[in-house]
Structure formats: structure tokens, C-alpha cells
Length: 187
Image (tube, rainbow, N blue to C red):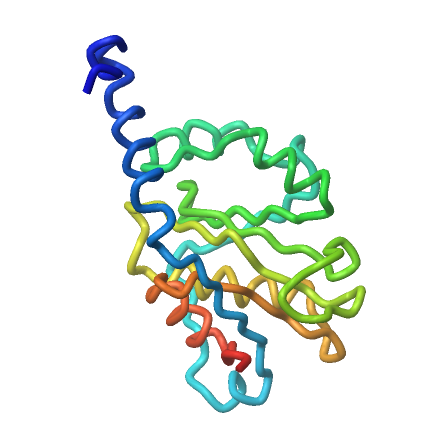
């Protein structure tokens, strides 16, 4: 409690959050589940419907990101840090921005196997991993996440390329969206 009294009031939420993370961080299991895209299962299932006005922009470098992205991400519950974007590009990632009309609805990353030295499964150089998928709160429940996944696969993966993702065990919505998009859990 003395640490809070010594700090200014604007730092109190950060101090409390840090204390909670230290206190329960060891109790929370951070397990990811690996999925692989199954073309046969997807072909036999109901196609992913793209929401009206849906579009995706592919970005290979910071200069590809429209300036309108930053204010849109700052208004979300988890503002996107530019240093994380820089890190993604520096490591070979491709940044995908999802739109509904003129509004930025979310984003996802993809990366080729050749850029991942160590991952959950052995990857071929051209294999694709989709990761860090975010749909902004105002656009949730509209099918944006699975539509963006399918857009990436259709534009980046040929039949001889495996497409993977890993999802946090606790993230039920993301697991369901990947399964709806034709991914099957690897055991």
C-alpha cells in the first residue's frame, strides 16, 4: 500500500495491474493450441461469408499502413504499439488490415516458415502461419476474423503450402473462428 501512496494517482492502475500480474501470473497456464488448415474440410463445409463492405489491405512495411490506422487503433481497448509493428515487419511478417467500408475493423499477421527458426511444429520455408488476430470491439460478431483468415489463405497459400495458426487455449472465440475457417486442431 505504501507504493501507491508514494506514486501519483495516475499511476495507480498501472501499479495495481503490475501487482495482479505478479500475483497470479504463475497460476495462469499460457498454453497455445496449434491448428492446420484442412482444405478438404473447408471445401465440404459452409463457406465463410464475407460481411457487406468487407475489404483487406496487405502491408509489407510501415509505409504501407494508412495513417488512418493509428487513430483507429488508439480508440480501441488495446492500442497497437508501433514498436510491435516494427518488430513484426523486421522479422518477415505481413500485416493485414480488415475494413468494413471505410472503417478499420481489425488486423492480423502472417509469416512464412522460413522466417520462423523455432515454432510449435516443423515448418517448410513456404508454409504460412497466421497469428495475432484482432477484431476491434465495435466490429465483433460480424464474421470479420474468419473472413480475413480466408482472404489471407486465398491470396497467400497454394495447394502445396500448409497454413497454420496457434491460439491461446482460453480463447474460445478465436478457436471457433479458425475452425469455422477450415482449420483442424493438431494433436
